[in-house]
Length: 329
Ligand code: GYE
Image 1: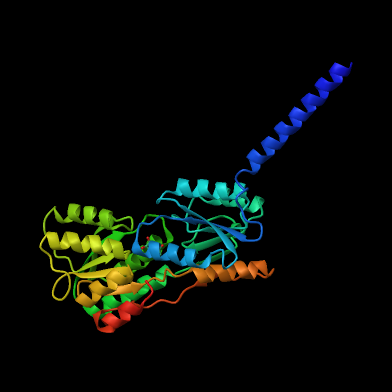
Image 2 (image 1 turned 135 degrees about the vertical axis):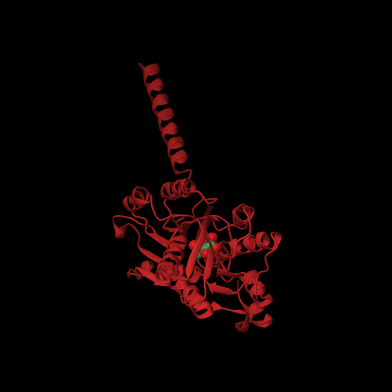
């Protein structure tokens, strides 16, 4: 009887130990979270462009331990499935907030529902999501991509008037808010202007390498009368210029007018040099605005559903070396 009791006690002790071990394993993902800090899980698109790098830096500069945050930063390498698994990981880790820069607009309903079920507010940054239920995200901070594109359209109207405008259109990552907005406004303008023609639409995926590749592919088919190359971001513009010059085109005065979106440092220098005709600004410095939303939520208040940053555009005459050097991106 005594032996039986000892055995039972031992088994119970073992089971207890096992249970504890199990608990630590479950909690394993959260064990390195700091209790006194606000834990923010950021799910970034990737590092495809200068804009994106500046955007990540602006987030990292704000969510520091000194400011009271623990930042968990995931780079999804331009893949939506990586973003979805990162969000699931953040949910398991029980972060306080999820900040998502969604690569594309569609395909978010279920994972955002999972975040909501776990009680974690989701803040969208830069791009938007197209979901049935708008309450699946708490707030959105970013650019008005249609307003940006309208600046480019205005410039083309003023520059070309009734003259013919043959356009090569380099699209950004397809189904991203930035691509959809910048494309829609251009396409609508082309419909309104009998003298405007889109010669071709090529997918540049917001990268220099892809834009160079598709542009070379197009130019290799023979020379055309190109007036404008409408690039949906700076890095595409760099790739396009490289390809155009390789195929004997001149970019700038008397040659092809390259239009670019973002207006990051290299782009502005190319604009000052005359190789980029129009640089439309897209502000990547969104970190502080994200923090404001989080602080509003921490105070128990409701933040604005959408916050848009103000943006402008530049031509050569607007720029000086000093102005470019002083800009933060
Ligand atoms: O224009 C591009 C980046 O969504 C605003 O994504 C962003 C765009 C930006 O890769 O450079």
